[in-house]
Image (cartoon, rainbow, N blue to C red; front, side):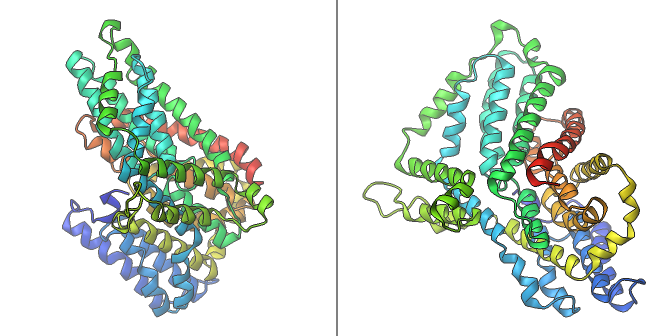
Length: 491
């Protein structure tokens, strides 16, 4: 994840910083001193105070988001919400280790440049047509983001895109639209690609862990891909059409004799990488092995009789990278601890804090209290309720961290959805997906911020292109939830 997730938002005014810094603790203190509302237990009332405290710090980022995730370890035992053992347990949830394994595989890819080689090899075949060059950029970004951090993917793809943008500008200075469309394709491709797998983006993993912990509903890697891949492909196709045919009309704006053959650019960059090293081949082998095992895990379990888990596959793949030699006759390994230490530990802490909060919302009775309060919502048509939830989360994520949004809201949506619709999946799944579908603002997602930071994109460009895609995402997520997801997960 980007520094935005790990650092304070330094540009907030001091008054607002102090307001948000003190508001949460004051509300928490109030819940400890005042009698709870009728029908609500003391534990539930205090949990509501803790949830408000964490949400206010997560939204305002006056304290680093991962640091806020540690609050339950201190507060919950002190105010007698739960014992320290039960509070600490979710910080070691199996799905946190699934994400850890995914992080380690992606770090190995970055260390040896495999991700860049995959990108350049793909882009070699993009041809001269601007819209197809943008499609190739979007597809390769999305594919890498399925398995790597979307931040790392965007950071790696940005220099490649900028080299093309500058080349086009030097040939045809009047054609700014192509460069903007190309850069936005990276931001949108990285966010959309992450939807396709459980390890592609933190909200997906948080959703799976929450459902497993709170409702004993297990979502497998392959199961999720049945829902995530078609949705991602649909969003990619629509995003590409919107960017290249309507927003910028890149083919119409470039004269045939001024079209740039980018093959020479990519060939040069690929040549700089040199021949594929043994370490790269090793990473590719482990990556493909892990992906195959994730996809066919149920079949492998049936054939071998072994209790194979997605988490076990991820950690086994990571361990294999620590064992395999980087080069023939060398003691160096494909992955060493110095490289592994680059894991974004803050994201894993955020998972733990979110899962702990979710567990306490359920165990304290707060979930039931909230569900009973809005029983009347069951009269709203199902499709309309999903549409409203997705819209709220999509536009909320424009101004807050998508991971923090998932951590704070999924535990609240689950019990209400169960009460209103009969299944927590009906709202939790689309809400988790919506957390990754904010396309308007630079602060909405790390890829948006990275592309905006290039200086080639203005705020109005992102809002102009992103607003329509937000609306498209809201409609498409609702449709996929009502059709594919309903069939796969049986709700």
